[in-house]
Length: 109
Image (cartoon, rainbow, N blue to C red):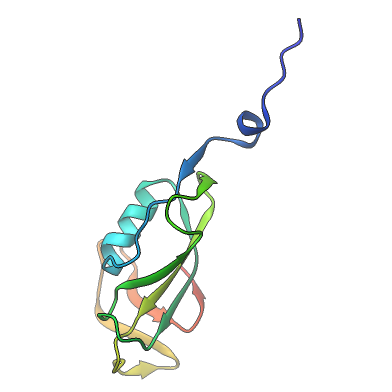
């Protein structure tokens, strides 16, 4: 008897993307990484939402992706963005992920 893996099994385990819209950047980052995903593009824009909050994500929360795939986020820099250094807006400290709190126009995290 021949046994064939289903398309889902062959492609890997699919899990639901967490919904991080409205969350603080650091909380959202931990949630995405803890769920087994990587970051795609992280974009920061001037916006009416609180600074460093997630205003959109792709794919949307609840979508199915294989673990290890990428989730892209758009963050708010607030209505009055802080100083920009070479088009990167940064907070001086580092976060718990040991990465600078530095978001550019369009960068890979």
